[in-house]
Each structure stands twice: as structure tokens, then as C-alpha cells.
Image (cartoon, rainbow, N blue to C red; front, side, top):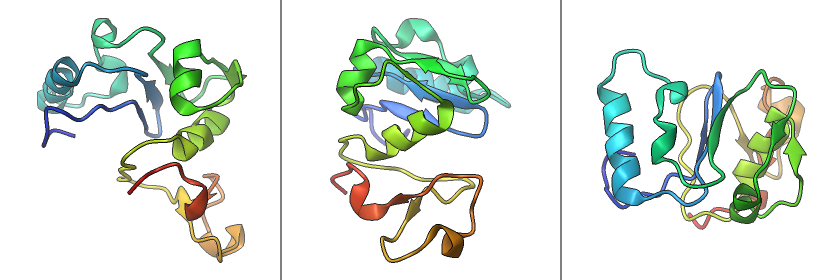
Length: 136
């Protein structure tokens, strides 16, 4: 996410946090991602919320439920006003986006021909590839 100053990172998640920025400013968010990259042991909770667009936020994955702003609902194409962390991650994976970048640990996308048992990653809800909203 540091190869282009034009990347609009609207959502990210890891084992600790869920990050949502429904209408990011490409330049300012690039500079903030660069700052985090250069910071030892940084995580999404270190992201400067003043850089985020209206309705954005960062939530711990341990939250029981997360209030979804109207801006995020519009960006992700969902109607729910509250979701649990795993449901929100599922919505992120299905959101209408240009690119889905997957790195780290976890199998979040599966082939439509695979069963959940074949994927062998019960800790993560897998989404069939054809159900993602990504253009690439």
C-alpha cells in the first residue's frame, strides 16, 4: 500500500483490528500509512484518526458489535447498522472494490468448488471467490 500515492485504502483487518475509511484522501492516507510503516511495532490502532474521512474508524476485533456509519454502509454496500467483527470482515470481502489485497495469515477466500472442511481454516469465515466484490 506504499507503492502508489493514489491508493484509496478503504478497509483493512488483521488479528487485532478492523480499519475502515470510507472516502480516504489518497495523499494524506498514503503519508499516514508510510508513517506507520516506519514506526516500529505499529498497528492499525496507531493510525491518526484525524486523517480519516467522516464515518471511518478503527475497532478491536474483540468488540461484541460495531456500529456501522452511513458512510461505511454506503461504501461497503450494506444495510446493517451494527455487525459483529466477523460479519463486518465478511462484508469487507464482498464490498465493491477495484482490488482486494490479501496478505498475512488466514484463508478468507475459497474456490466455489471447495467446502469449508476442505479449506481447513475454521477460525475464518471463507467467502467463495465469485462472491467477492473485487474487480481484480
